[in-house]
Length: 161
Image (cartoon, rainbow, N blue to C red; front, side):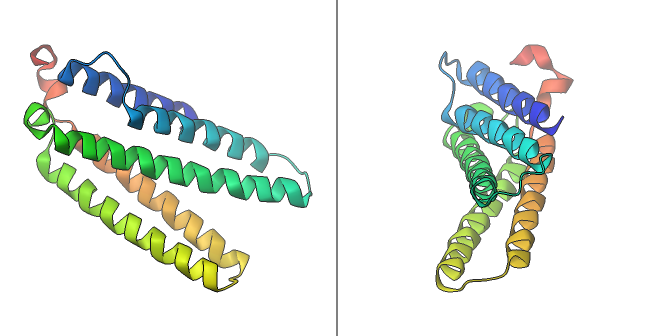
């Protein structure tokens, strides 16, 4: 269900951005978002299997890392796209929420660089890996919450777009 909701989320953001900016092409954030949804579906599939193979375990870890990476890239590209075209999006989105997302992305990128640096130096336990993974999921959920607060005038006046 979450994978389907991710597909819908990125499809709707792409459709609205194309309509507001009067573009025909899909945006890069859409492609990264769809890739993240596909990777999440593959990750969920592997969670349901009882294969005890080191190659599969490594593949699962790689899949979840790429899911998080693609989801972050798509969120970054979405916010950059909105900020770059702020005058066209001004009527449709809440600028304060967009700025919060922008700051949160900056913190997330900095923390990711710091975490990768720490992981490259120290061999930490798998418990630490799980803590990092779940915290990233919490941040991504917060991004989706902010996104639900981002769009403002589409429901009130959909014909104005």
